Image 1: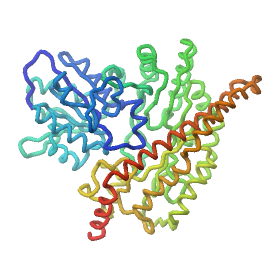
Image 2 (image 1 turned 90 degrees about the vertical axis):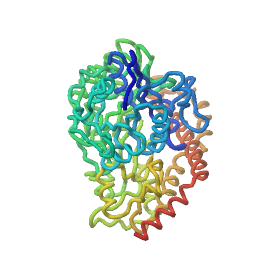
Image 3 (image 1 turned 120 degrees about the vertical axis):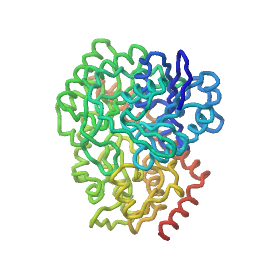
Image 4 (image 1 turned 135 degrees about the vertical axis):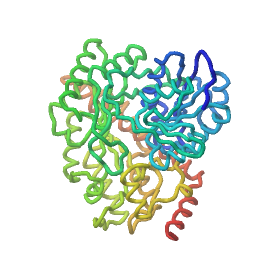
Amino acid sequence: MRILDKKRYRLRIVIPAFPTFNIYSSVAKRTTALGPISVASVVKEIPGWDVEVIDENNLRLYGPKDPEKGADHEFLQAERPADVVGFYGGLTSTIPRLYQLASFYKKKGVTTIAGGQHFVGKNIKEALNSDIDLVVRGESEVTIKELLTSLVRQERLDQIKGIAYKDKDKIIKTKEREPIEDFESLPNPDFSLVRYAKIKMYPVSRIRGCGMDCEFCTVKGRPRYASSKKLLDTIENLLETKDARHFFIVDDLFGQQRNETIHFCKMLADYQQRVNKRLDFTVQIRLDKAKDTELLFAMREAGINTVAIGFESPIKEELEAMKKHIKPQDMIELSRIYRKFGFLIHGMFIFGYPQKGNTKINLSIKERIKRFRIFIKKAKIDTIQILLPVPLPGTELRNRLEKEGRVYSIEDIGWQYYDGNFPLFEPDDPLTAQDLQSSIHKIMGKFYKFKYVFMLGYHIFSFPALVFFLHNIRKGWKIWYRSWRNALVRFGGWAVLRGWTKSFRAGSFSDQLKKAQKHIQHD
């Protein structure tokens, strides 16, 4: 881990490519991950350092592409040699690609650093045995400044909080770093540091952490807040420098700090009126916020048009296992309130969640599929995303399933399958892993269909019918647009599912799954 004595140094942060075509692929081409940009924006302010971010899933602006996958790193290193390369490990499914790139750069004599939610517990050892020199544990903005400075000065690393590294054959873990509280001192994310990316939807954030304590989630801890003014500054800057119009507020739960959230929405609405520009926002929010009429009105005035809601399941027993204290019928009623206020609803579900304790779910696979379809229709959800449970590293769910001996080994089912589209553990009787995988595609296949391409034509020809809404053109536009937009998205969803199916058939997962099942049964 020695860095040459130079006048300037370069850090390259890499967001690894998805392992194969999946349901996120099309979205990834229009956006990027916020975490790496936040870290890069801090490094930009360190004297003597240049920094760039390479998002391998978004190389639409003259990006040097590798014929097989991701970016051409041979070209990048020849064109702009990096002294240190950092890897974003926020998505477990990209870890094999991350290690592949770490090996490439390690052979070039480059210092390699990795950080992200994947690197907890024994995965730290895995990383340090996979050509990663240093693992950053927890939030990285403060750690990276101290770490890069120490590497240049060739100082000891054991006083830097929140890192892990190898000293000969011994793994050293330094003291935990306290969660960041002072967000005002951090620079706003500089998206110009992302090279080759064509970004249409900009991720922004105000809140870190979540107090919901879901068993399957990696985001834990007391929510910590930046000011509304800081988030608004970021949005203003992106509009003025990038002409950004579409934003995704990536906070796990929008509205956790209710009064400040309403204040932010009012500031945002006033800003758009002042500059005479209408912006579009998507947020993740809890269902029960539908009861807060004042918050919903403020959100609509601020340009928040789409709400992504974690319904998780329409099955009561599964909701209890997930620690979701709500009934399916209540979820339907709350969803309809969001629709009444004019929000587009993106519903996120988990199919086949493993039962917990004495809870017994005596439902056939056919009945489960039926309940999902009925619920989606009754809740009037515009778009859906149905995934299988993912026992992510560090979650209570993984710990529980490992104790029960149900998780397929990484040797049989690699990290690349940890994206929610593949069964990763033995399900509850009478279900099989094959049942689970086929079921999510049956549900989404019924929702996303080719026939919607014909609906697009119908909506184009029906556009003149808006003349009947001249007394309330805004209402007429909303009705027409929602129907047209949903037809477009559902046809696009059909194309995505078709691409995923083609990719799956060309792969070897079915054989790997059978091998993993035999090992579980043998154990």
